[in-house]
Image (cartoon, rainbow, N blue to C red):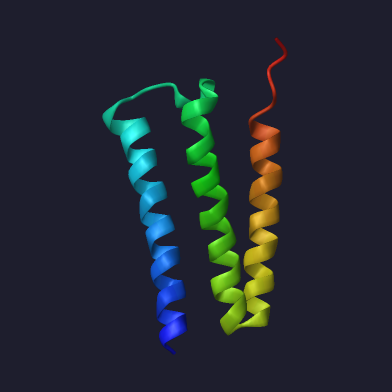
Length: 89
């Protein structure tokens, strides 16, 4: 039970760090961080860690709900790839 609390705390920390970084980049500094890989990398790492946490934390308590979250993550990834095409240089 104590280990579960630690896992939830870690996930919550990742989630809050992502929200903080996104808020800082998008709303406070208003910088085009997606064009600078040094700024984009920590954002993407937290983004994917957060999404992984959403799938795994639900999966541990309910397989059907975990599968639903995994399906939604796959759909989200496909939509992200489709709506953010690579720009040729």
